[in-house]
Amino acid sequence: MSVLQEPANLADMIRSQAKARGSSIAYEFEGRQTSFAEFDRLTNRVANGLKALGVKPRDRIAYLGKNSDIFFELLLGAMKANVVMAPVNWRLAAPEIAFIVADCKAPVLFVGPELVAQARAIQSQLPDLRTIITTEGGAPEWPDYAAWREAQSADDPRVEISRQDVAIQLYTSGTTGKPKGAMLSHANLLNLVETGEGEKPDWNKWTENDVSLVAMPVFHIGGSGWGLVSLYHGAKGVIAREFDPTKVLDFIEHSKITKLFMVPAAMQFVVRQPRARQVDFSRLKYML
Image (cartoon, rainbow, N blue to C red; front, side, top):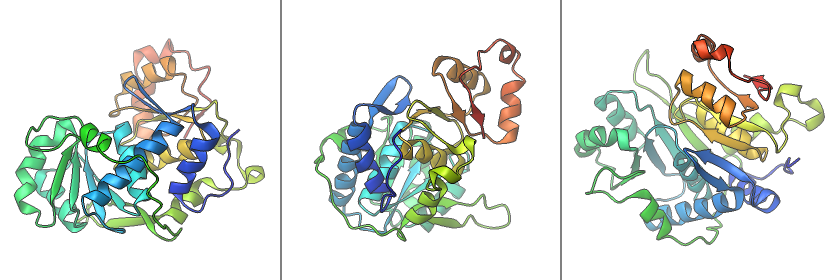
């Protein structure tokens, strides 16, 4: 069981897990597996890459894309540089996306393959934006993430981070006005997971054999926060690119999911699938 001594911040949490769980799998995405030790090195490269782009501590970077292991590399890599990730709801219209990227004054925007057209459409409206990087190609005029990351040093950036520093900026849905950037600190996120082991209810106890499904969107705490919870506990996080009820059943069966988080409407879609009656749910312990 790999419960950490309370780390000072989430960047230290990654370093500790790399030492404790080095060769174990931290994330799996569409057949690609990343160990805790490898994740530690990749996030170092991201932090050093952001510094090389001139991104300063407490600056925001924006992510416009669906769920991916790359999102978590960027999220934790940004944290190691004391930079704040602002993921954008990819279902929004171009003017709404532009508002959020402009609001957080992001100098760098990372764009998934499905959102390249939207990024091209709004680029001219973003005065603070200096660099666009595509996570999976699709835009020859912009650098590709993998090539950019691999060109950076894997040395630990060793940037000073306080528990009170902002770790992620999630935007509200904007139903009553413009979306607002809700700032969550390292302390806020660590408080989600740091309850003393004796005080935890059973559903919130983890072992390193747990396999978590990250199927809610990462622009929402249900995706990004849940993906951090499994990482903190040294468990494996299996990432779904987007919520698809039929694929959730496949993940439960083939990836041997033990825990998942879903909003009730999504859960209803899953259990209403005719195939839900045939799926082996024996490994699934908790649906939150």
